Length: 283
Image: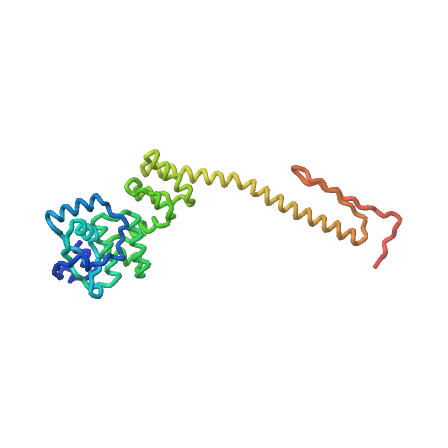
């Protein structure tokens, strides 16, 4: 954690003294990437704090006459649960961007974030503070491809993400779902994973089979679609003939068109009177 703080805050990261701060003076962290906290783990941590105290200080920054939490929300919550009035803290003068980065790093180091929370934290740093993926990777000590792979998870619809139990469905399971475009298909695969306890390889095989079936259905529909185009073209041609016959009648030609719309074809019979005995007037 120390070298990560130095990467984000600078070389003076280790030069701050620890001070005890009243819990009531500490505001929550608006950039906290973690969305859920295990109550059992918090109670275990609270019991440990009651017996041994807080071994590692939390990190805060000054906000007017109060303090805002930067990192250490689990410890802060556990202190409240343990009935403590104060908590040891390191105080830094840092901006919003660095505060968000420190909070993310602290959670990543402790493995407190699930892969969706991690992806959302990356998206926040990229969107809120205008970082590039390369810059974010450099600050967090990760590869750019690792950042990109996490961000891809956010392409899953929110309703699908809510269906994913991250303690059952691995990140590789989740990424495999991205090969399916429709949410209903993704939901169907999730159902199969839960019911049949599919591993990643089995899940990918199922998804590939579904994609092949979809491709086959599309190919089977194509001839029918072509027939529809032909029928539409035939009707256009038929209307053209009808218009020609109508114009011929207007010009004085005795023309009759008989039409039979069969199940498989159109039948047209056009009869034109020869007008024997009539001469043709030259213009």
